[in-house]
Image 1 (cartoon, rainbow, N blue to C red):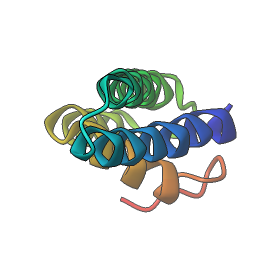
Image 2: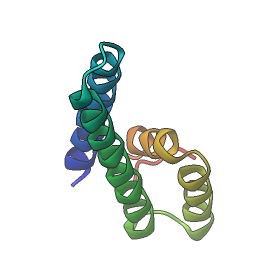
Image 3: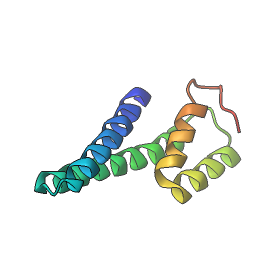
Image 4: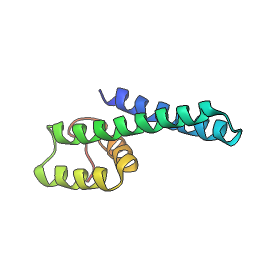
Length: 93
């Protein structure tokens, strides 16, 4: 489940950069690709919130901290949570 959310992040980021590059050349497809990339980043953000809420190995204060981090800094907070919570029971916070 975690690899799928990280894959969504990577694909979304690549599409955003490709869309920006195509938009600089003035193509309409660049805008569409950019919007799809942003949509995938939004899916990653929601997925990160769900991962924080359903993590069985975290204490309530840890969940509150990570919820604040993921909501306050949408994509970056989810990415940091993903890297710091790779295996169950091995969170750093």
